[in-house]
Amino acid sequence: MSADTNPLLISPAARDALQTWLDHQRALKGAAENTITAYQGDVVDFLAFMTVHKGDSQGLGALAKLTISDMRSWMAHTRGPDVGPRSLARKLSSVKAFYRWLAEREGFEPTAVLSTRSPKFSKKLPRPLAVDAAKAMIDCVELQSRHAWVATRDVAVLTLLWGCGLRISEALGLKGADAPLADVLRIIGKGGKERVVPVLPAAKDAVDAYLRVCPFPQERDAPLFKAVRGGPLAARSISQVMMDARMQLGLPATATPHAMRHSFATHLLDAGGDLRAIQELLGHASLSTTQAYTAVDTARLMDVYNNAHPKAAG
Image (cartoon, rainbow, N blue to C red; front, side):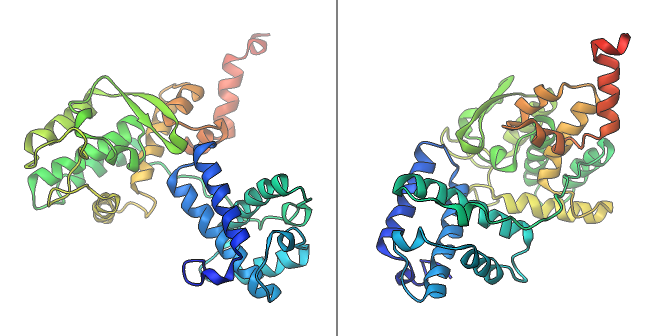
């Protein structure tokens, strides 16, 4: 259920409070639009459930009096075949974030909501491709399209993912004004955070090759990578061509566009790259995220520690 399907399920006061909070997240916290959309959907569904659960539209006063029992009822209702523990944990996190802000603004104690335990789930570590598999993926993608220029385009996109560690949204967000690629790219990532990414000669060459054969004119403010009919290239097109290639190569379903970004980080680390520098290149706020992306294992970290720490010599 959502406010879009039945707006009467949410009181005007709660709806206004939610909109103010979303505006706050967007303007002051720099939250990305995808994050805002997820927050809105999660909290709207929560508020709508509480209306049905309580039998009355929940104003701000009623929302301040929710109990642990109410929270358990919502979690039991929300959990289902299409909502696993990971998704439920994300929804609870959205609700808690909203309640922290609401409680501070309205002056109530949000203990029942904030003390609700998140469901346990095992974190899926990203699975990077081996170097030879990443190369084979790019080679195979080049053979997938009936149009030579489309094949060259797909190679350029994948080379940017693997060679520069870009997210697929960041690669497809490049504009005509970015070409030809400079020695570094200024990328606006999640939450509007800017980072500087070096561009390998191989990535420059791949993009140059695409530009030479692309049948559509490049406009400064238009997307650099074009779809078959000249519109913006969609991420699902790259996902599809990678799916076709991985089936031919016998690679697992984890061989996705994002896996190329994982591979960038892992291969840099294997070559002796500094974890902090890789964190900057990926645009991660937390080093722990980078460690997961780079598939760092305890033995490798201990080797680095034993070889580099000043006390190791003693």
